[in-house]
Length: 356
Image (tube, rainbow, N blue to C red; front, side, top):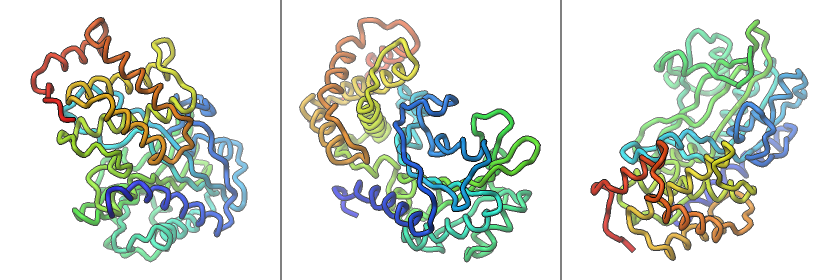
């Protein structure tokens, strides 16, 4: 796949998902803003199930099942923004694809998942593995109904918590198996999603969820090094991949959140998170010597062409914040975050020559 066409594959995956759920007659839920606060247990919508929770909590999952695609942000990368020796495994922004059915449709959703992966996403069935806890007999019996071979069902290769799921709801948890697919370049298998039985602490079965992420699928399907390579932002000239992925992740996250009207600030948690991402762009772009006009062009192209959102031209706003935080990086090294930034600025290891 040519680099300049890489990001178009994201739209291909999510459009194929919509075609699939339409063909199967699933009821479709409309997406919401990531900053909508529709789920009080999370700061940002981090998975489509946040929107679909009322269906299984109120026991009114429709007979057809319900499905949706939803843009999401998970902010685990914020914890290592200023630890450049650590490579972030995931991108903060992605599009989640989800189907929710009743427990009685467990076999159906397993069959549908394999059809979606093979017929619509064009993944060879021999390139799919299942990681499952052998104790989960209902999940095991259901996946055995598909065309997967016995050698593709891997038992207890991970710690027990890998096969469990949290929903941020007291008395509700999940048991899951995970789909992994082969990276077409390296041959390594990595997770792309899972099927989860949602149940109460009393054992009542509340529903079954299929959850998939677009960038993880693209990474494996097209043999990319990292999920962020799916967006092809044009920063491949940065040879330090740890720093490049941090800048790319922060640019994408900041564009998405600014586009929804969130502002960086120190008074509200979500605003502080956005501020941290933008400050990291200021820091790393300064350390590696990217000129402002080059950085602005990358941001402008990203918002215009490379994200699955309708943008409202926030590039200039984002660039002004980047300049503001860059100018104040050394002015007030108070607090853990600013102290880390100050330390990195003084570390010759990360003071790279101007590259453009």
